[in-house]
Amino acid sequence: MNFNANQALSVVAKNFAIGALAGGTLYATGVGALGLLNYLGDAAASTDVAGLAARVFSQFVSRAGPLYAGLQLPKYFSISTDVGEVFVKENATEHLAELLASEGTAAGQTQLGAALAISEVKQLIETVAVEGLDQIAGKLITTRVGEYTVEIVIQAQPSQAVEYAITHLLFLK
Image (tube, rainbow, N blue to C red):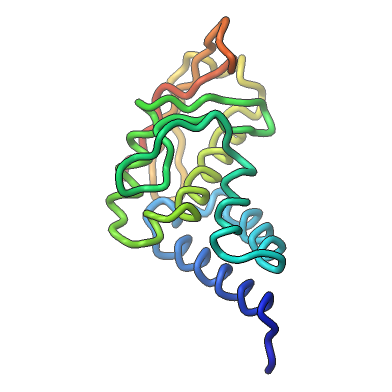
């Protein structure tokens, strides 16, 4: 079977993402994996792997702060979701960073690994806030995601650039 360069890149990107999803700690949850893998397949056909990671990352994140040491995860950022824009504060991302760092593989340290983790957070927000962010603001929400119990708190933050913020995000085995 002959592959052109774009097809080969698509296969590599999909295999990398599938490996990250199958072998990674957070990625094993699979909350948003299917949609992201479909997107990866489309994007990989027209770009290189580094460009693919940047493109995936840019689909979800804005207002990003500096990165955690050794990771491609910003210490704080805004994430666009189907229920609105949510700011993810550093005291929430530190637990996500711990999870990525504990992975101990290159997948957890890449921009694509961070993008996959952020897509899981996006999907989590959309799942717990299906009735709207006002309905859950200020409440500790505990839910199951794959093998994890997840605690999340989204607070209203009046007079800020982004109206809601995740102030607590914890993945427990």
